[in-house]
Length: 486
Image 1 (cartoon, rainbow, N blue to C red):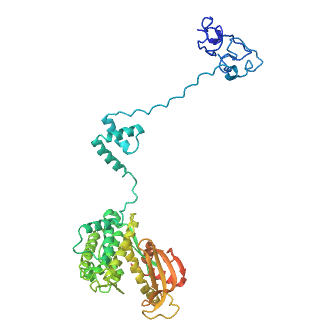
Image 2: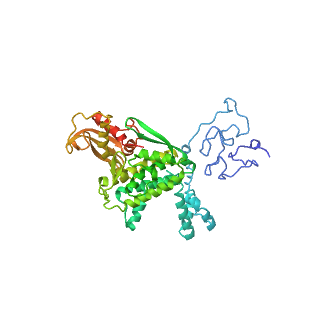
Image 3: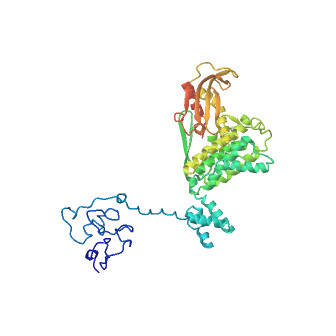
């Protein structure tokens, strides 16, 4: 078969490309309008169809290869292309417009079998289906109850597929669960409000101890406090910390008439540190995880016993709690304050343990934290006076005021959960704090203030907003740190 260049003439010139015979007009040959008059093509005038020649197409008029003969070589491409002309200049009718494409109709819905739709439920729950698959699945869910139930279970499971924020439970969870239970069935003998913090903190610490492994009971822990002049510390283990809590909680147990965990080794008037050293030295071996049982049993007995104490009302210090007081060696605390003190120490030592075993631990509930902060604020005037008697703090700028009289005051502002405002008398423990005699203002975060009162941060490191008498502020911060003990 020969190529197009060997045929009799170019297409559209009135000749058939196969036999060379003339063709009828209107046959729709290339380069030929169906209504154009029959006349030969001349290169001196435009193509009868009214369309400009296309030099780039070899079978169109004006292309050097269209005639099959060599063209003059005056132009680099073998010839000069003819000028273009518009169809409007020929006076011929315009060609029929090309109709606009008809928009395609919406795709037909998918028709899938039941087992196929059921297999798509997992992808549908994860929003991984296409639009047509999603429509087919959702239409099927309205008709099939079994698939609808399965889809609900899968969608609920998808909601659980997120990284856990914390391994620890919400610190308010226990309080909310107990509140819900007590609303349904109030207790016959309720736990006093001033003992609720101790009940909650011992339960939280026990939950932490339940989660740690056997080897972690021997993880090193450093007990820290402020001895009035500088930070102090003592190295022990997780089991040693629980033994410390057991021996010091024994002060409350003895005041309530319960057994002393030290037994015959106990000595009247012992300080918390002395009781701890006695307990540690009385054992032939270092404390192990077996100390958890006696500590938890004692905490249950204490909470159970204080619930039966007559007159256990929730006031500042809970001084109506049967007239009981708890001796701490050099000083005494009312039973209500002693229970808050033990809750505070349980929280701080639980924090020490959690840090040693890399366990998340949250602060107490707001109402319990407020009681702890309030107790520390009420103890600050006595700590100030004790430091002055020991020569650790300069005396006030003027003579001590009489008991019950107004004197210089410092405003302690505790921010965050459990916070509030307290006016601290500076000149005497018996003086009355007054806003009219305010000489300084200190602002601290609630947890930061508790860490300062526990001796976990030094007064110089406490991030405090300060305004007013700098010496008074320094004395109060040092007195807060001096509240700590082993």
